[in-house]
Image (cartoon, rainbow, N blue to C red; front, side, top):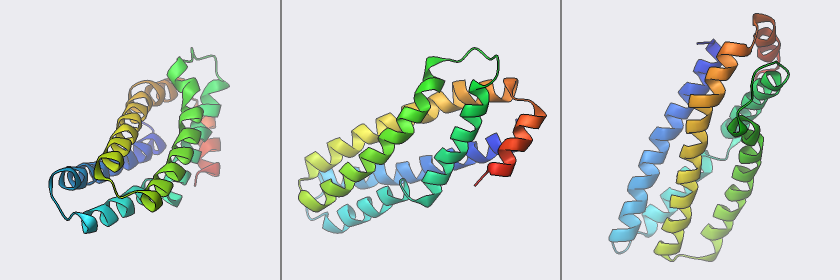
Length: 152
């Protein structure tokens, strides 16, 4: 697989580790009284999913997606939806930040974050099983070099 795709895949692996920690914090918030410190840590962990690294990751994926759209490749609907997903994650980040500032009700926090995690995993699954293989198959060496020059 192309080195740039390997970099994206490694980022997904790191995000999955972070999400595992988030899920453990959610479990504690749901089932343990006095989980205020866990709640603060939870929102700090969530911020990592919306910081500069995440933004650059999505920008890099968009470089590849646009190059793929310019080929003769059959484009799966999930590949077409990736840009919309990336935009939605930005909106969700804002909603999660508002949630942190407006409620401390554990059930509301946990349910909202669980929904986000499901969407995030679905998104990563589509990228790794549909988008990345299509890019690996259809993009030329020249296209990869052009993408690499713009990579963040």
